[in-house]
Length: 370
Image (cartoon, rainbow, N blue to C red; front, top):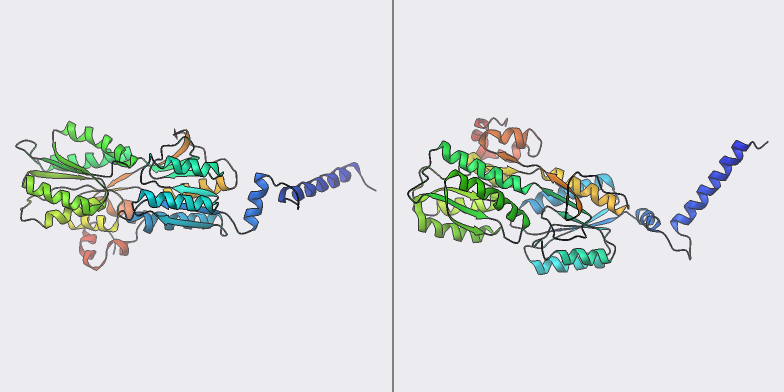
């Protein structure tokens, strides 16, 4: 005997089956957006385009891409990441974006060379129904679906504070023509603009004069500039504000390559906590680097990208920028005494990665178990 409960259950099952047949899209029917997403997953997963800006900064190819790819694989083993690096060419990045739109990637994760001109890439993607995540560097566009970055204003402030504190602790002279050289990032990069805007008030309030500054992420450009300033100012240079480890390395090379005797050696800041930068700190050639945990940045981008591909809402955020929700990673200043705690104990690096044979002794002095 069929009871009312059983009858209702049978009708519900039939309705569910009918709905599922409609959802996957039978021949001759128009599938909904959710149906197309389901079919895409069944056919082998989503494809995520990842466009990164340059090769001057090692993190992009060696950390951001591998971390993002690994996080996507955790979320969706059948999904793919189409990765390209524009090698600091806006034209190349525009072509790469056009190619990814033509391939109909499900989501485009874009770290722009020029945050202003990249808005056209976002518009083109949106016109084809492709959501765009602004990654690391901000894109000036009202059409972004999500923003993943680091707190670069705080980066600039931390760098300047570390530099000023070291100069004051060393009693570096403020008058008599002494001062600081600034090696900034490219002025087309919004991150560099924010860092500079945050660093300048700290430096100016300290009483240390800025002798000269230059804007470029290219270490070869900064090396030439730094050599010129050493010739011009000599040992009047008491400190170097460098926005990243690449530019810090250029400054170190220039200082080593001159006949000027720098005693004491001027403190130099940096960013990215790269292995060369960390080892320069161990050598006493670089004073500070600023650490943004790229693992968190890549994970946030992967989660948002996967949600967007599925048509789901992106993770909630208390902050928005350019009208889009924003994930903002918080930086930490790293000096000799904090390398172990911040970079090794956190698992970002292993001791063997930092403490290669030439650095074993000094690593022990820094408290790193080798």
